[in-house]
Image (cartoon, rainbow, N blue to C red; front, top):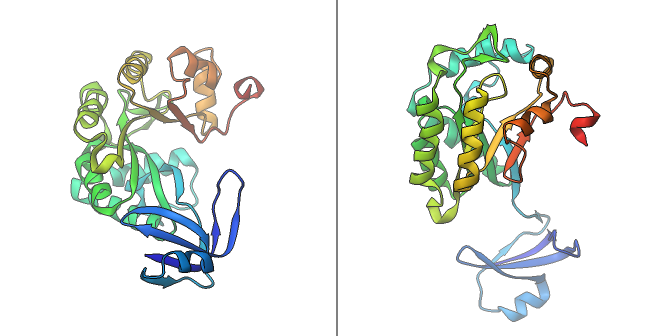
Length: 275
């Protein structure tokens, strides 16, 4: 198939933008890119799709996604994060079924593909949402998914008794850490290597030091990457101070700082953390 008369943003080493450009695709592989007139002569017998007025870009990558929460838009607006989670969102998510998780994953993936996102990192998929269903949705859709399964053993936010998780979301070492390893063994590299299984660790205060250290050890041994929220709200900063750490010094102390870790929502950092 020859896609013609488009503006092509290559994002190659020279950062070329090709006006009146064309792309030749064979199967699921891009085999040639160039000016429309040149490629039409070169591949005169190819079926053609005219994309005049369109822009072609490489697939976008979403580095942080909560697929389960796609179903919950508009249910808890205008609240601070912890209240939003504890009073509304976790209550709803704590009643999800595997069917809900699969439906949410399909909706999320459909929206991403329509907006040009071809790869995403799911941050923290709970066991009750049905991790197999998430993987199946990725497999069926053609998208690439780095899929973080939740790791936790403390059912609070920043260890505050007032900020408890909904009982339906509470997991332990066996279902979260060891469950992730089982899913990694089952799904990692599946769907023509479009599925990668990650550890989706809860924020500090939701995971014990012991479990973090066990997770980071397994991560290094097996090559399982990690993603985690860190220093998202002031309560997180207060938690780190309570254990005589800054966000980054704490992460370093439990082995989280590596090339295989993606930390997200790092709002409350100081200069030493950034350095």
